[in-house]
Image (cartoon, rainbow, N blue to C red; front, side, top):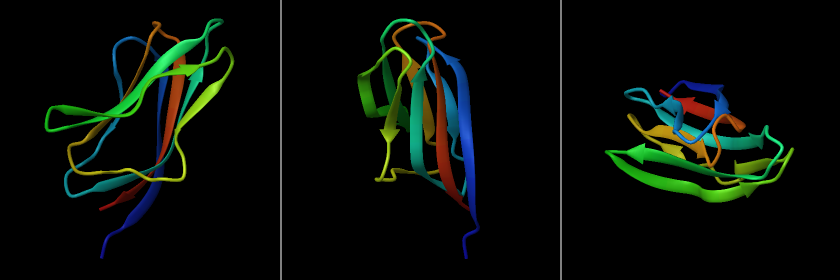
Length: 108
């Protein structure tokens, strides 16, 4: 019987190079309950959220605009499930321009 654990992963000062929020451990699945990207700059930015599986990127949000002082909830309601070795990533159009947090249910 699987053991379920609620957890969260965060990244500070996300920028133009992808920040990995988490990589799913072996023998584990991760249901993403929520993922929020917050603009911390004085200009609008764009953000992309995706996961990498077997070297292929799958986008959840692609170049979505986040207004000044605003947030974008990229995942709400639907819960994408990641499998072992999948990496959840976020990037933005401007260096050090956002913070990101993901709420995740792990099953191991």
